[in-house]
Image (cartoon, rainbow, N blue to C red; front, side):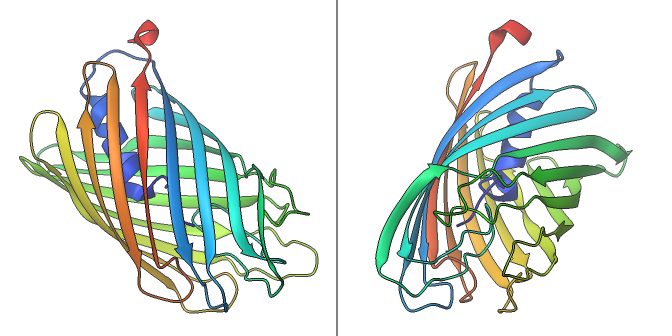
Length: 263
C-alpha cells in the first residue's frame, strides 16, 4: 500500500499546495477524496491487494497547514496479514485468502511552511509532523492498533517552470503485542513541471527503510494534476515498486475541492 503521501506520495502533497498557493487569501479550507489501488506479495507467497479510499480535510494558513485524513480500507490477502499503516509494508499472512474492510488509521499532520526561505536563490524548507492513530480494526488486520509518529523536512528549489523537491524523514513506530517493528528512515527526490497554467506533471523516487527487517522499499511514481475550474483539481498517479518489501504497482486518483467560503 502506498500513500499520503501520502500523500499519494510527496508529489500529491506538493501539487495540492501549488494549487492553493495560486490564491492569496487565508485561511483556506479544502476537501480531498481519493481512490487508490496497489498490489504486491511483499515477500510472501500470495498477492496482497489493497484498496484505499481517503477523505482529507486541509486548512491552510500563510505559514501553517493542518491536515486530517480519515480513510476506508479494503484488503484482499492471506489470513493473518497485518497492514502496518498507509505507505507501510504489510506483514504477510499464511492462511486462506480473505477480504477485510473498514475504517483505516486516521492521520493528522501539521506543516510549518518556509522555515527557511531564500527568494534570491529560489530555495525553501518546510517541516512536517505527522501522527498515525491506531484506529484501524486490529482483529481484521487492518492496522497494528498502535500510534506512529513521523518527522519530515522538505527542501524545495524553484525555477521558472520546474520545482525540484527533496525530502528526508524518520518514522517512530508503535510496538503492537507479539510483533517488533523497527523505526524507519524515509527519503524522496523528484520534481514538478508546470506544463500549463492549470496542469502539473511530477515524478518522484521514494526510499523507505523496512520496519520488519526486509529490504528497503524503493518506488518510482508519476502523476498528473490539473485544475478543473476555479475550485476543483484532479490528480492521477501511478507507481512501480522495485523491491519485495513494496507493492509491485499501484494507481489512483484524487479530487480536491477548494471551499469558496474561506477564499
